[in-house]
Amino acid sequence: MSAQPPVPAGTVPTGVDPAGHWADAGLVSGEAVALDVRAARLGSRVLALLIDIVGQLFCAALLALTLTPLVLIVLPDQVVDRALTGALETLGLVLVVVGYPVLWERLNHGRTPGKLAVGLRVVSADGGPVQWRQSLTRALVGAAVEWPGLVLPLLSWVAGATVMLTDPRGRRLGDLVAGTMVVHTRTTYPWRPAPAIVAPLVGWATTLDLTRLDDALALAVRQYLTRGQQIVEPYRSRLARELWREVAAVTAPTPPPGVPEPLLLAAVLAERNRRGSLRLRHQRALTAALWPDPATPAVVAPAAADPPAPAGVRPAVPVHRSASPDHPA
Image (cartoon, one colour):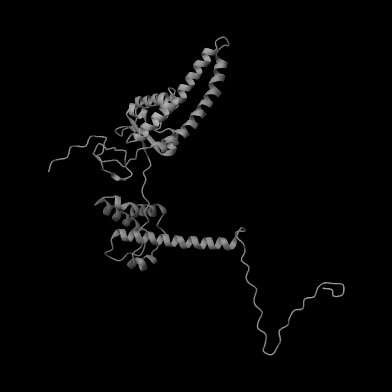
């Protein structure tokens, strides 16, 4: 069998999904390990851009309110003319359109406020941190032909959207020229419920003392039980033993012998969740009894039926008379 050609740095072989169906950025670390990173597409990047536009408008208003009065106070009146005001407007436009993304990407690890809010980051095409030259290049290209698109705005917007939709990693024109890309910083995991308790451990779990089991350790146990299948052996078993050692130190009594650690962890977590649900149910019942919701209509108990008349006694029939002067009610 012939050997496969080596995979070049910064790419992933075709058809290979390194960490589930979420990783599609095609980034490989220096140790030839595929990174679980998703490339940012048109939707998330447009949302980040809208947030950044609000930030740029705020910066423009701040410059207009501070720079203009400062120039009028410092410079004499004969110097302030239309040429100077035009130069200041151009300088402010450059600072807002170009300086805003460059400064934020360099000082905040490739994240502008919009990208930080959406969970995006600008990185080099090989996965490294973005450099000054790359940030400046992508900002200049973006200002010229993408947003605001000083050169043929409508045509450049259509071209930029087409490039992003057709590029395998969702890169825009500025990314292609600068050698960068935008990736998600928040990893998406499919939701999995925690394993339930097995039947032989139900009796032991009900006698557990869980008063010293804090929330942090319980959260660590839950994360292991829901994501343990993503950990390869022998690290998965080693992590289970370490977690059970911590849980056993704060719980009692000791479990039955010969039970695997993942089953013990699942039993402890299921019993803790059961007790928490009962406690919450009792608290809600007590709250509803003490402070009933006025929006909830009160349930009126049905009137008790008249007892049956004794045998031989004719039941009284009420007589209805109209109210009149001769027969007052």
